[in-house]
Length: 436
Image 1: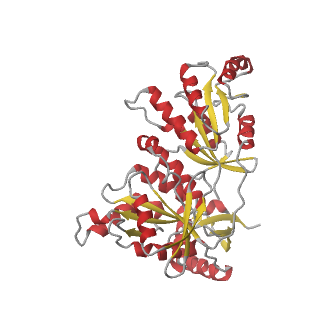
Image 2: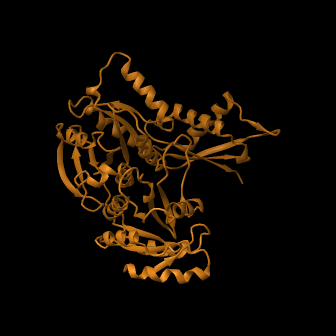
Image 3: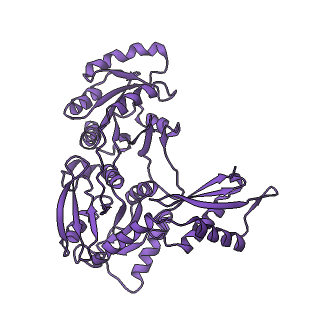
C-alpha cells in the first residue's frame, strides 16, 4: 500500500520550494485542498507516468538560532533515513558552493539513488553553468528552471526510474491500523499498553518500510489486527527530536500502509499545529480516523472537562467531524479495551456499500424536505446517485448542471447520507457529474 517517498534536499535558496510548488501547481501531482485543513504544505501526493509517489520539501525547517551547517545537515540526514529517492537541488546562478559539497558528503553515505537537479537554468545559454556540478560525483545532472517549468519532465523521468520495485501484497483479512501524531504524545506507550492487555501476539510481520516490523495480534473476541509500525518507533530518533516537522515522514508511511488511523493527541499539552498537519494528511488520504486523547489520567477533571475538551477538538478539527473521540491513558490503561471494537467498527464503515435504490430514496427525501437551489433562474435537478467505490465510500450524483451544485447543498446531501447510514469514522466523497 505504501508509495515511494521523494525528498527534495539542498541548501537554502536554491529553489526547493519553487520546484515543489511547480510540481503541485501544474497538476503533475494530485492535491486536494480541503477547507479547514490548516498546515504547512511541505508534502504532497504526486503522480508521473502512472507512478504515484510522495513528495516532500525539506525546505520547511526553521533556521532560528541554529548554525547554518547544522540545519542543512539535519535535512540531509532525514532524507538518508526516510526517502527512497533523493533529488539534490543546487543553483546554476550561485554555482557550486561549499554548502553544496557539505550536503554531498552526507549524501554519499546514503544507500539511495541521488539525482542532482541544477535549478535556475532559465535559458539555453545558461546550460554551460551546469558542468561544475558533475564534480559532486553523482553522475548525470539535470538542468531545470522552477520559474519557467523547464526540464521537469526529464527530471521526473529519472526519479520514477529509480523507484523500488513494488512488493506483492498478500491478502489478509486482518485490519491494519497505526497510531500517528507528533513526537511525545505517547504513541509508543499506547502500542505497548495495547499489546500487553491480554493480547496474543501471533507473529511478527516484516514491514514494507525498511527495518520497521508490523505486529499481528488477535483479541479475545477473535478479531485479527495488524498494528503498523510508524517507521521509527524502533529506530533512532535524535534528528527527529530537533526537527519536529519530519515526524510527518513517518506518519506518511504509516498512513499509506493502514486501513484505520488512530490520531493521538496529548491531553496535557492540548492541540498543536503539528497535530493538524498530520491529521490533515490522513484526512486527504481518505483513511478511516479515530481521535485518541492520551494521558487523560494526568488531567484535573470535573463533570464538564471531557465535554469541553471534545468541543475544543471539534472546533480545531472541523474537517474531522466524522471521527469518533476516545479519551484514554496508556499509563492506567483507561478505556484501552474500547479501541479494538472501535477500530473494527470504523473499518467496516470505511468498506460499507449502499445499494443504489436505498441511496436514491435518501436523496429523494432530502430534495423533498430541502428543494435544490436555483441559480440565475435555472434550478439544479438531481437525477440519481450511485456508489462507485469504498475505502472511502464514494458516490457519484448525476445532475443537469454541476455548476448549479453549491458547496452548501452538497454538504447538506452528505449530512443526509450520514444520517441515514452509519459512516462514523470514515470520510465520504461526493462526485457531482452531468448526466449525458
